[in-house]
Image 1 (cartoon, rainbow over the protein chains, first blue to last red):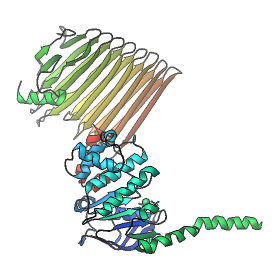
Image 2: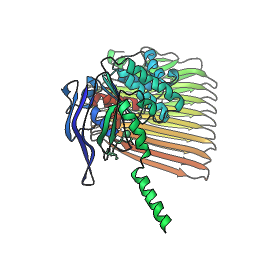
Image 3: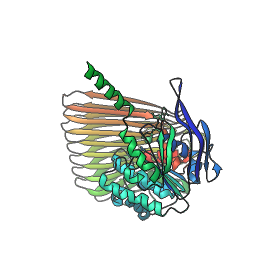
Image 4: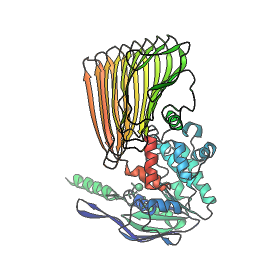
Length: 252
Length: 305
Ligand SMILES: Nc1ncnc2c1ncn2[C@@H]1O[C@H](COP(=O)(O)OP(=O)(O)OP(=O)(O)O)[C@@H](O)[C@H]1O
Ligand SMILES: [Mg+2]
């Protein structure tokens, strides 16, 4: 379905080249739910932005359904069947939730149909369809609307960037059902979820760990999941520094 | 009335036919229809061109429509309309001007509206401006609105100019007595080399008076807009002005905030934000399948809604 071949992405930061994604190759097979995880700042969102076309790779190629889409625009990729729920959803003055669902669906959906997408993410649709997608929505509400718009696209490849972020624990259980249902109904499509959440990792067919802009490891859930636990036991660089300083103080 | 005039009427007053309630339709400087009701009396001024509209105290759930349409090129007019709104009345007033200019001479309508709002009266005022026609002649509208608000009266003004007016200087003046409340929502879009200046002077003279003036605007192409809002607080009062603007192409916007507090309990507040459409907004809509141009249109339509 989706294939990244040696994809790199670097930016110019105060004259210095900074490599955010380094030579990543990976495949998202058809009819699979892939979860991408890894430490903050590892390059996961950048990867999602490269897939959706918001960023253009500085090296490598991206294929979708066998076609090279590296040079294709965001609009073209979207129309080919790539949908992307942002980690930080965008707010719009004056655009209503209903408008956004309609744009996403790409056809005139009735208010009733729009409400079904909202209900799926646990929003009482009646209260929300006519709300503006502006600063008056809470972070969690906005995040759910973002997910609903991606559901409305019925895309071949749906990418969700930390869908659990900002969503309360109670609703989160229902959100898992959304993904589980999507996974079950996965006909000729695939799902890529960026997440740190155990429950989401639990429904993955495959897990990819991204660290420092590289694929640290990837494989089936059974293979990768146990090793994630081991990771968290290992102290992070800063923690090691703090420990080292503590020892020094102890010396004095 | 001809087809073009009908179309203009639809644009500025959402009117398909003769409205309910009181109305006066002015077409090419002539009255094309008028009706007074038991509570709302419309008469012509004698010295100058214009109307006197008297609304009886306590009138409720009634409306007055006074649209103006111009389709002759080269027409220039100044019209004085005075509204006397009786105590406790609660009415909707719909004004608006549509100019279609296919000729080479400028067409200009300067409407001077004065509102004398009685104690406790409540008005909703809607004014739309619209221009069309591909002649070289300009379409010019210079509205002056003066609002004198007595104790505890409320005025909500919605002013919209989205399309086709080449030059506009809009002057709004309001004087508020104790407990009076003014709310203004202005929406403005300019194209081409259009120029629009909107000036407000709001005097909060009475205790507990308040004003909230919000302008949302879009300047495209080489157009220019100036938003100049002054609020003077002379009593314990609250005033807020806001200019929220999108610039595109080579459009330019100048926002001039003016706050004057002459009383220690006056609380005045101004906000202004001018910038182009946020890249993330465009990107989001493009990931939903829109082209960049379609995304822009959606964002602007929403913004000016
Ligand atoms: N346009 C850019 N310019 C400079 N630095 C950038 C740019 N985009 C991303 N970065 C940096 O690249 C790194 C990876 O960012 P990215 O958002 O992809 O991380 P992430 O894995 O999604 O992290 P998180 O788990 O916190 O969401 C970060 O250090 C970030 O600051
Ligand atoms: Mg991220």
